[in-house]
Length: 240
Image 1 (tube, rainbow, N blue to C red):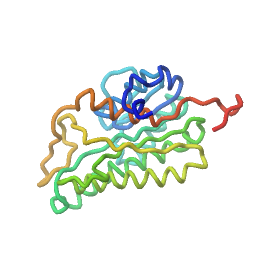
Image 2: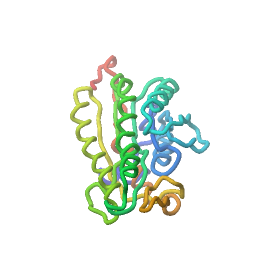
Image 3: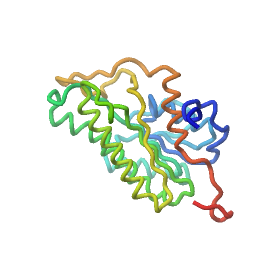
Image 4: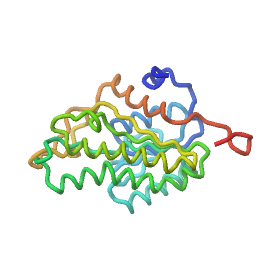
């Protein structure tokens, strides 16, 4: 069981055939890797990101997850294209480096707007369709920083700790609807160079390019493992 969560090659081929998935942060990093793996496993996928996704075999919607109105419209478009929604992966996020006193209120508001409010916006917009599914599942991407107490990570750790708390609350709230809610807490991911990382004195940097294939496989394999296998529909005698 543990091996299956960390080795994409051990996943059942076609496990997600016909299921409909929306992945945020799909233009790069973990989100892009999850999109590729879900697509390879037979799912119909849509990417949601503030940047257009790389040209791949799926539809992309563009929205900043911090903008609730834009997210509502983007999710509606994704559901229209997919014909419904079974799987939601909340992978969009930004980093932050520095001690607590290094960040002003703007930094705190921006990181929480993306990492926490953004997750809430997308989940809220997707819930009506997830409730209508027989396979509803949400996986939120948190971080080891949520529990490990890493130095120079106060803001980022706080935001990812909130993701874990929100995940637990959502799991309790959505249990009667038959929607699974889980989180993964991967090691810190190196990101492509851009302006998404909040650093002391307003410097913006984000490390090196996307992490190596082996570590990325661990991250996206864990996300995939937490998604449900396809179950019989109620009309065919199955249960939620």
